[in-house]
Amino acid sequence: MIKALTLCLLLWFAAPLWAAAQPSVAVQTAPVQPRSMNDTLTGFGVVRPDPEAQTTKDATYAAFVQRLYVTLGEPVAKGDPLLILRTAPSAHANYRSAEANVHFARQKVARTRKLLKQQLATHANVNAAEQALAQAKAAFAAQNALGTGQKTRVIKAPFAGIVSRLPIEPGNQVTVGTPLFQLAKRDRLQVALGIEPGEYQRVKTSMTVQVLPLFRGGQGVESQITQVNAVVDPNTRLVNVIVPLDGAAAETFLPGMRVKGVLKLAAHNTLAVPRSAVLHDSQGDYLFVVRKSKARRINVQTGLENNDLVGITGHLKAGASIVIQGNYELSDGMPVRVQP
Image 1 (cartoon, rainbow, N blue to C red):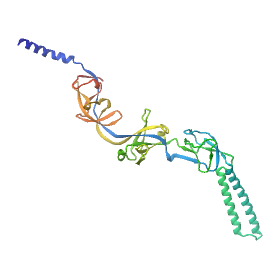
Image 2: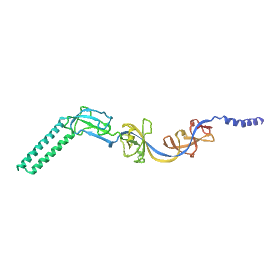
Image 3: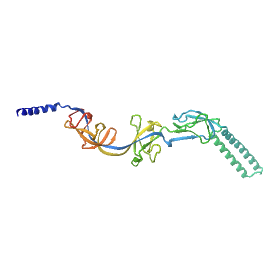
Image 4: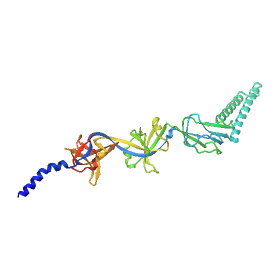
């Protein structure tokens, strides 16, 4: 009996000493905060020139490509030489023919007016001759505008941009309608972001999109959706959402660059915690709150994610102190030391 009483007394006195000796974990905390968080959707795509900001130049007469000053994808300034065309003999013959027709039409007008004075022609004859001269002059002016009277012609850039298509090579023979080059404005780009067809109904024009380089850090740029296609792209099996990149926003990207776009669908009010606060095990997502210098496990459900914040639901109230660093070492009920 005396031994049992002695053992109880020893345990009673040792309990505070054991508690004091129990190890604690240094942690950092942050309060749970109510936040307005955006429901987002992420799509991926490739930057391309805006189709409405491109100019295609076709050959207007038969010629040979004598020289190219540019390569595909090269930036050019307004007025920069792009290529030299050498006029084909057949095209130059059209110029000479038009020139000769003007000469003969002038002679006919002069003859007809002379015959009118001799009463051997009528005013109608003079009018017909003058009309033929006007038509000959118009045809000759058209040949002059085409440049068929020149042996060679330098084609220059009509505006500053990027050579987005160049299907010709030196020595190529071109005919009327043959594409020579395509020039895209540097400050007018766009990206077609691919989204899952099941998300199609959630996306509307004018929604805000954050466009970011896929293989590089940075904040990216903000733009708005201008078009939501109503068909599935046969190549990607996704629905394309068109997002323009104009002005300064276009300077951040290059045609062909792969990007991702974060679409902001709607805002919701929720409790939010830093991403580092949320842990996961076989029971699901959870975090630790600090109560009376001890860590208490709280099971939660995660929701929206914006930047480094995660929306959560669970047995938590706004202002509760949660562990954001040191939580990997914790278990339920473990003593903690909160560090600033």
